[in-house]
Image (tube, rainbow, N blue to C red; front, side, top):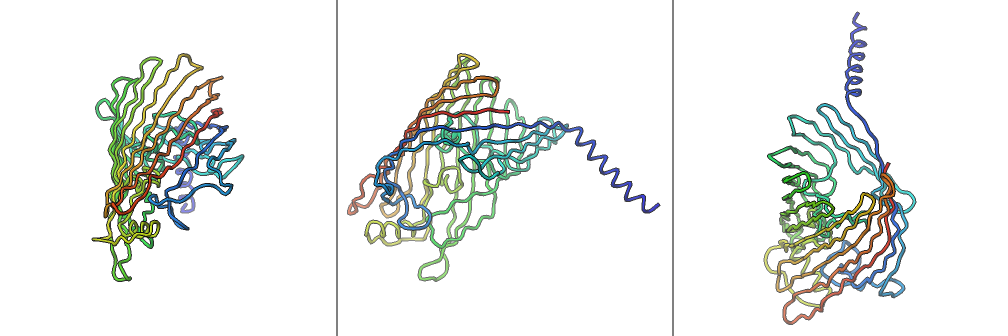
Length: 412
């Protein structure tokens, strides 16, 4: 009799899982995408560090290639890295999504997870999400296809990424509220030998207000902090400082019949340190700035005060305009902007303005079959370095990029 008890338990547990499995609805999906683009890049100059090590965005390095060309032309003909296959699971109190993509361009590559999360609906219209998903500040407004469907991410359209998180989301009034505690993605500062300590997760929140099914506006914010333990002068003690990052933003998705307008604007302090922006917009430490500036320009600036962080500030904005006269044809034009400015230390600071433009047509040949030709231009801007009156540093031309081609996509 005792031997029958564990057997009965196993049968009962198996039956429970079987019932749960049949109660959930599973559906698979996929998308194959190939990019075919011609590019012509004026490589300009790179703001980076001389020699090896991580890039420091404040010092000029001649970035002409080995053939001594000012313009580099290339052809992209590759499987996009966001080609994917995935599945959706739906149940009475459960929703889940898993999606896997290819990590490298070309005809193949390694497989990586794009999404892997589950949501428990603990109350009407509310859910607890656990796993890897888009963060709350991410609203896909642009449909730009170049550069693996870059969608103006970090180039006008706010980007939180797909990150591990514990989130709560639900209906609040006529809109949707999302709050998430997210895995930190700290970027390296100009702090040689520095050690990063993170004790709190990144926090993001957003609210999307629906005027109608075709009209909505949204607001979002985020905050992250971590400490850097940095060795003191002559190896005596440490010079520790905190890196605080935050973002505030707002946007809208406005549809007027066959036309749509999608604007967004966001403001950041040390946004790159929290991975909301590209690493070219990182802040820097006072000692790192002084050391690199003296090395690059032969100056003799001296570190004054504690080894703190020089904050980097960014204003980012975008606008997408679209027109879809028929189900098989659509058009979209977009522009993205990133402004950059740092605090001044001993008279040294930096400013830059980045602009991106694109124009596309969307041809729908059949359900799930698309050809999207697109042309675009990236102006990396000119870095303006404000310096003490006795140091002369010219503006630094960071180059530009022109592209033209198409994305080919079949969803299945």
